[in-house]
Image (tube, rainbow, N blue to C red; front, top):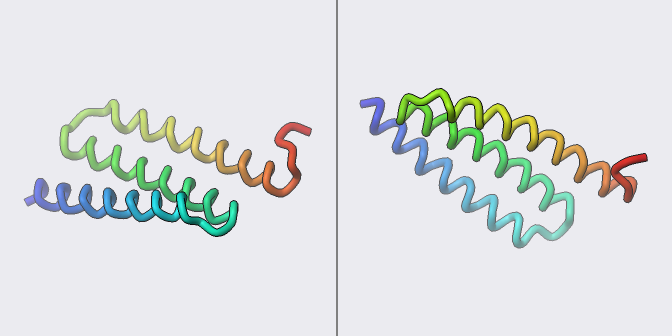
Length: 89
């Protein structure tokens, strides 16, 4: 039963990533594109955790933690660049 639930969740996260990719390409403003990229990072983390549940490997959890840290720093850098025009002061 858990296998079916994991496959359903993977397909839902895949659909969400496709919709985020569409928003990333068609976003009317730069802020929309930054938000779509951040949401896409969160969906990638969810996909990695679901793959860990499906395969039973701890490597996916560590990769998800690394992606979360890099995604957060990247989002902050994009937003700071958007607001100030410079990342490092």
